[in-house]
Structures are given as C-alpha cells and as structure tokens.
Image (tube, rainbow, N blue to C red; front, top):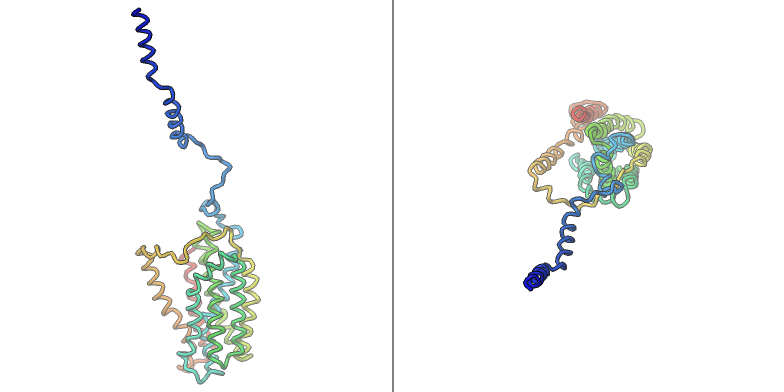
Length: 318
C-alpha cells in the first residue's frame, strides 16, 4: 500500500513539470542563437559593393576619363583665364567708351556662376548622367562665345552670352570633371586630379597667345567665333567620352552637417578668399602692360605665363 502511494506521489511530482513549456524555451533559444551561427550566402553581392574602395579599378578606362577631362578643363580655363586678353581687345576696338572695371564684371560673372550653379549641375549629373551633362555644358560654352561675337558692341549682350551662359556651361563641365576621377582611381587619385587640373593651366597659357594672334588677324568678332568653334570642335568629343562607372548616390541638396567640421570650414573660407583675388592679375595684366607702353602681345604673354603657373599642383599631387 505504501509502495502504491509512493508510486502515486512520484507520478504526481513528475507531472508538475508541464511539457508544454519546453517547446517555447527551445524555440526561443534557437531564435536567439540563429543569427550568431548563420553563414551569409557567398553569392549575394552587397548593395554598396560598386562604391567600395576595393572595387575601384585605379586605372583602365579611368585614363580616358583623365584625358577627356583634361581637354574639357582646357576649354573652360581657356575662357575664364583669358578674359583679360579679350577684355583688352574689346577696350581697344568696339567698347573703348566702357570703363575697364565695368567690362571686367563680364568675366567675373562667368567665374562666379561656375560654383554658384554647382549644386544644380550635380543634380543634373544624377538625372541625366555624366556624358549628357558634360555635352550640354560644352555646347552652351561654345555657343556662348559664338553668341558673344554678335554682341561685341553691346555690354548687356556680353553679360548674357559669355557671362551668364558661359558660366552655366562651365559649371556643368566642371561638375562632371570633378566627380568622375574618384570613381576610377584610389591610390592614383591625386595624380589623376593633378593631370586634369594641368589641362586648365595649359589651356589658359595656349589660348592667351592664340586669342591675341586671332585678334590681330581677324578682329574681335571673329576671335570670339573662332574661340567658340575651337571649344566645340575639341570639347564635344571629349565630353562624349566622359561616363560614370556607377551612378552618383542620392544625397541632400546641401549637406549642412559638413559645416560642423572645423577643418572643412577653414578650407571653405580660405578657398573663397584665395579665389577672390586669384583672377585679378590675368584680367588686368594686358591693360597694365599697355599702360607702361608694352605691346598687346607682351600683355598676352604675361597672362600665358601667369596661367602656366597653375601647372604647379601636378607636382604636389604626383
């Protein structure tokens, strides 16, 4: 009887462990351990893989990008860096009644609109791609010079053509030239950017001499026309070769968080001050040369020498 009672008590005692509770405990433990022991599928490619540093070819078609951006920068700087030569020619011919300080604002407007339209230019690259944006910008640049050839006696017309349209086109071309090298180069990014900026120094030097020679032979109107034709002839094929390796990532229109970085703020302010005074010499060197009885060719040579000094960044980036 006692044995039966003990057996009954034992059964009752064992029955207090409800087997229903074991299943959630095992499933809970399994769900907790599952992320730890899971192995990622090697065939799955991360979404940001094309943007990783290891995926950058560091060459290849990137050298075509460098050569093309060299030419587009050549064309852009051939306009903004040589405005002093065109300004002196205008003051010597069709706009002799205009004050030099007033006419210099045409070139200043071209220069100012380059960075001012930069945010819009980057958006256009995202919407239409690098090639289309660069070709539109180069076409506007070339046509602005051709349009200016019909406004050589009209100051307002010069502001609207080579000033406004030229600045807009330059902004589009610069946006593409600055955005593409980082997609093709990593370890050689400094060299690639240096070669591209070298195109600006070469363009400013070569075109300063060429524009003065054109003016002496064909006059100011045809100087503008030939300058525009040259820009289209060499700039459009170069712009067609510019293409992005991966689409630009979506980003805010203005990333205000960058201004929390003191280094960025210091660089931003220093760049603004530096560029503010950088273009005064090439705009006024031809006029200064004339004021001390030097020839216009000498003035153009001084502008070419000043622009040649912009080849210096290649030495530091290489």
